[in-house]
Every structure is written in structure tokens, then in C-alpha cells.
Image (cartoon, rainbow, N blue to C red; front, side):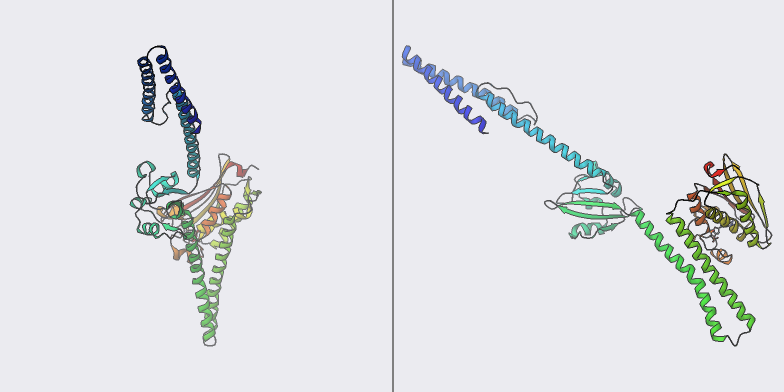
Length: 437
Ligand code: ADP
């Protein structure tokens, strides 16, 4: 500001001095009338000059910001130069602000959480892409609208209006069904708010799975435990009155139930060790012929001659992996075939080399499985027929264990089954797991 004042006054005084001097000279050399006329003409020229440049200044002021400052002469050159400098500084500051804002927006866009900026009336000023997808909003369409008109769940409206934001709100937004969000408001500035949203659907699913798992395990253990304690009570109360054979039968039944609990706990420990998956899978060279023979012998022992068990596809190749895990997976499929095949049926265990890899298969002529159950068979405790599984000594964890073992060996489970006709469970190994003799 200061820089323009002195030259303006200086030039105004200089112009006044020149007009006065010209008037006095004309007065002295010619007549007083000429002196006055010369001074008046000088003043008129000065006025015209200022009116001209004031007009230019006025026009410039009415142009949109950023229009070039007009050029000036004399006093007005300084004025316009000062205005030009000021306009340039303002443009630079605006550019700096634009860059800072862009940087902030980029950072907020990159956040894995949703961010909404709300004004004092809870109207949306800005939101990032995560918030758009989590809350089902669109920045271009919804900017300026009150968020409570768009996210209308009563608990959300209450939360926003309560002013109590210490705890986050858990919300199932109707605009994005199936999602669970954790919303938290952070007040800032003059009654403005940041609304942060986090997708907790996966966490909630895991929590539900954990709860179901605990409930299932408790239920699975409670049933045999009730039976065992029932038998013990009966024996305590009337040991002297009941015949020895009956007491022995009770003890046998109690032992069966104890074994069932033991199997369940062993399976749970196996599953937990596989799921924790801390140790990488052992890279042992397992002779396939030996492994297949063991699985087939185990199946025969379990069948106790009730089925025809056949081993096909002699091979001298090797499988690369954990012997114990592979044996557990193959054994589970073979034992299922025995347990779900009625007496007189047949079971075929086979190995086929395919495209450098290999296919292990257990086919039975058993009860089969309805197609609707196939996608869920590897879930923990999923059974087609709960009663039948228990009767045959199942824990409901066999195929879950198989699935984990296969994942660790990059192998794939294939199931074909027809109710009443039988099932084929196959494990397809990639080439890198199959070594020639
Ligand atoms: P379980 O201990 O109950 O056998 P699994 O996880 O091994 O548990 O198997 C899950 C379910 O899949 C079983 O309860 C059974 O209903 C079905 N199933 C598995 N294998 C067979 C098969 N070979 N034939 C018919 N049903 C089978």
C-alpha cells in the first residue's frame, strides 16, 4: 500500500506545479486571461487523464478474478503495477492452497477408512471413495445434502444428534446391505464434523464363526459327557443289584463315548495346528505306494470285512509334502467311504498320474450326498445326517482337516456324488508335488 502513496502525491504536486507555472508564464508573457485559460486547459487535461484511467480500473475490477491488469502511464503506471503485484501474489497463494487441498484430498482418498466432512448443519461437504462405497453415497450427487436425509437409520440420526461421540456406532446401512460399519464422529473447527466409517463385516463374520465354533464344540463334548456321567451314576447307585454282564455293557458304552471325546479333541488339535499354520509344510519325499497301502489297510481294518476294499493304480512315484498330513487327509477320505457305505458295498482307492501331477481318489458305492450339500461339506461340523455321522464315530471335522491339508499342499478337492449310488472324493496334486521314481 505504502509503496504507491508517495509517488501519487509527488506526481499530483508535480502536475499542479506544471499547470501553475504554465498559467503564470502565460499571464506574464501574454495577458492574465491567457494565464487563466492555460491553467484551466491544464486542469482539464489532468482530469481527462484521471477519468480515462479510473475507467480502465473500474472495468478491470468488474472482470473475473485473474484478468490481466491494464497498463498505465504516469501516476497510473505505479497504481496498476502495485495492483498487478497484488493480483499475482493472490494467484500464487490460491495455487498454494489448491495444491495443499489436493494433497489433503489425495491423502484422505488413500485412507482405507471412509471419511466424510460435515458442515455445522450436518450437510456433506466432501467424502472419499471409501465412504461412497461403504455408505452408498455419491460425492457429486449428495454434496450439500444433510447426511441424515441420506443415511436414515434412526440409530445413526440419534448418534449424530446426541453429541456423544466417545464410542463408535455399529451400523448395518440399508443402502449397502450385508455390510457392518463402525462409525465415529470427530468434531473439529467451528462445530464441523469428520465422520469416519470402517467396514467391520469381516470381523463380525469371524466373531460369528468363533461363537458358532465354541457352541458346536461345547455341544459335541456335552453329549458324550452326559452319557458317560449317566452310566457312572447308574453304576454307583445299583452296582450290587445289576448283573455283571449289564454293568460290563454300560462300561463298554461309556468307553465308546470317552473314545468319541478323545477323537474329537484329537481332530480339534489337528485342525488348530493346521489353521495356525505357523510351520511351513514339511517337504518330505513320501513313497506313494507305501502311503496308499497304509490307507487301504486302515480302511480294511475299519471295515472289518463288511466291504470289498480295492487298491488300484500301482505307482513307484513320490509325493512331496508332509507325510503325516497327507496320511491324515487320505485316511479321512477312506474312513468316510467305509463309514458311509452300507455293508456289502465296495470301496476303490486309486492313484492316477495326470499331466505331470496326480489324482488320488476314493470311490464308494455308499449312501451318496445330495448336490445341495456339496459346497458346505468342508465346513467345520457340517454333516448331511448328524445322527448317522455320530453313529459311525464321526466328529464332523474330517473334511475340514482334509481341506486345510490340501491348501497347504496346493492341491484341490474334487467331489462327485449321487444320493443312493455312491461318492467319489478326489485330491488333485500339482506337478511340483509329484516326483517320478
Ligand atoms: P464326519 O466326521 O461327520 O464324517 P466329515 O467332515 O468327514 O465329518 O464329513 C462331513 C459330512 O460329509 C459327513 O457328515 C457326511 O454327511 C458327508 N460325507 C463325507 N464323506 C462321505 C461319503 N463318502 N459318502 C457320503 N457322505 C459323506
